[in-house]
Every structure is written in structure tokens, then in C-alpha cells.
Image 1 (cartoon, rainbow, N blue to C red):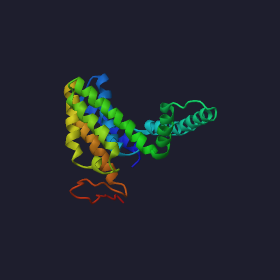
Image 2 (image 1 turned 45 degrees about the vertical axis):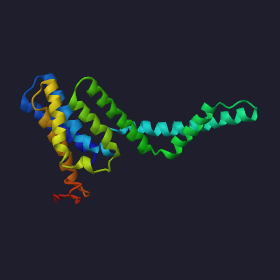
Image 3 (image 1 turned 90 degrees about the horizontal axis):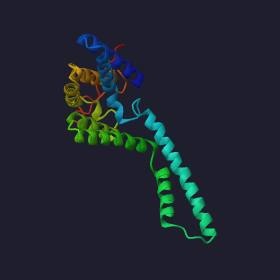
Image 4 (image 1 turned 30 degrees about the horizontal axis):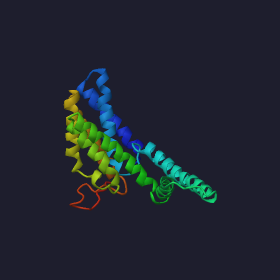
Length: 215
């Protein structure tokens, strides 16, 4: 299912949660934000709305590396034919840029950028004694390297996601964020179950995809 659909469902869940808990007006955004992010988080195992900007950045980095290597080698060639000394660092940089441009796929660069965000969350969580943020960081850093609709699309993630939401709930002192997070994440799995590919809810114990046709 498309990311925009998951986002709309997440926003709807957050809005309902906000109305149910009757929070102060400023708190409504927390429910909507948590639900929306939770509804999209499962797709961090591939290109998604959450990583779309990083996909564009990774494309730029790959192109920059290729063009950079061309410039590097042009400078090296000029220095060589002019009988000038070629610094080892310059030669190494040219080779490194070429290897990045030729061997690293755009998806790998994007995954690495997402993982960097996850590592930052882990660092911030450790330094501020926020265990839930450490857990979120581990998920963000780990998810991009998984097969799409694999472990992130299983029932086993729901309690872990609820624990992350509970930690945020305790920190902000806003009741219902944990349940909102779990329902938001669960909505993603249910929505994808309605698609032809289905969802492997019990992977890796049971690798069969569950599909539900409404018509």
C-alpha cells in the first residue's frame, strides 16, 4: 500500500486518540505525530515517505562521487604530465570517490544515511538516559538493511513499539501515547494485508503471507 495511504490512516488514528483523551490543544499534535510516524515506520526497510529526502540525497552523493572522481583523475593526469609530484592523499581520494560512485548502489547510501539517524538517536538516548530513544534508534539503524516486508512487518514488533511509545508517554506525561503508537504501527500491517503481496505476520516462524481480499 502507498505511503500516503498509511500516512492518512495514521493521522486519522492520531486524531481519534486525541479526541478520546481530550488533551490540551497543544497535546493533540503529539497523538497525531506518534500515530503518523508509527503508521509509516514499518516501511523503513525500503524506500518510503520517511526516507524519500534521503533517497534524493543518496542519489546526489553517488553522482557527486562519480563526478568528483573524474575531476580528481583529471587533476592527477595534469600533474603527472607536468612532471609534478602527485600526493598520495589525492590519489587515494580519487580511487575512493570512484569506488563509491561505481560500487555503492543508491539504496545502500540511503540505508547508511538512515542508519546514521538511528545511531544519533542511540547516542542521544544514552547520554540523556532515555531508554525508549535508544530502542527507537536501534530500530531505525537496523530496519533499512532488512528485506522489505520482512521482520518490520511482523506481529513481534508491536510490543517492542509499544515499549518505545510507553517510554515517550512517561517522559512527556501524556496518557495514551503507547497505545496510539501500537495501533498506528498495527494499522500498517493490517493495510498491507489487504494488498496482493500480503504480510508475513509470523515471520520467521511461519513464512507464509497472510492476504485478505475484501472483494
